[in-house]
Image 1: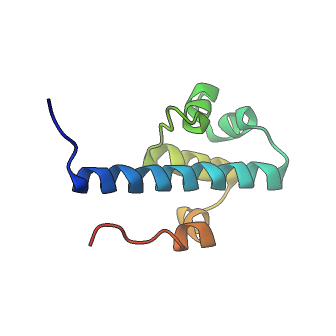
Image 2: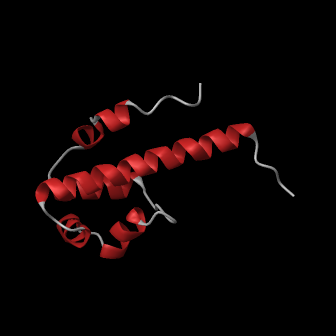
Length: 95
């Protein structure tokens, strides 16, 4: 049986925190623009299932390519997307 190392546990935690921050940011942007997730998908040229799998707490399927497409659909840059207190407050866990 494989045991998870402390490093792997920290890495999984960091990945989870980043994914949650990404999801919260997209939900915030949708709320600001008064659009629903399926409308975000249409604007971005991705399927609604792509957006909903990102939003699903049990899945949180997020890739940088999807983030870029969604940002393009919202007409914002990646820099604008990530330039928030939520991302700035994510501590560097792996040193």
